Amino acid sequence: MYRILFTPEGKQDVDALPKKVKNSLKKEIQKLAADPRGASMPLREPLECWRSYHWRNYRIIFMLFDDMETIAVAAVGKRLPRSKLDVYRKLERLASEGKLAQKILAALRGFPR
Image (cartoon, rainbow, N blue to C red; front, side):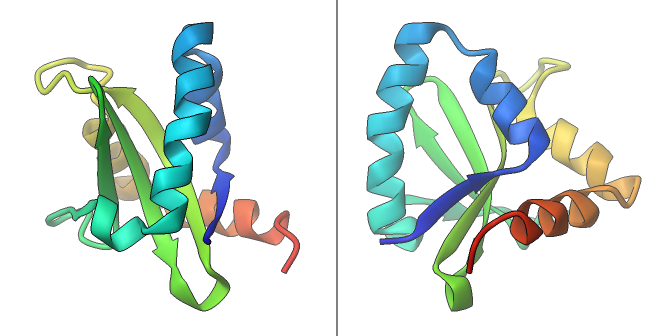
């Protein structure tokens, strides 16, 4: 079973969800932790190191660290392809600014090994 951690943005996304959705998400994310590759799809460039897990009308975008058996969730958002809040665009913006790797490293540093 993989451990789940959240970047600050990923945690903000979860905190912004309605309470019922958050409670369901906690249960659903255990399926992801049990089989992250089987339950998700790899993303394409420029986010080729990331994976997407679709649940209801939401996307959970994460990076998988097999060596640490860890899933780093960077974004959770509705599946709205043309929305300014689209999780893919948010990650692409962070990646282009060079901030995404820093946030993943900061989340991993705070995670007990």
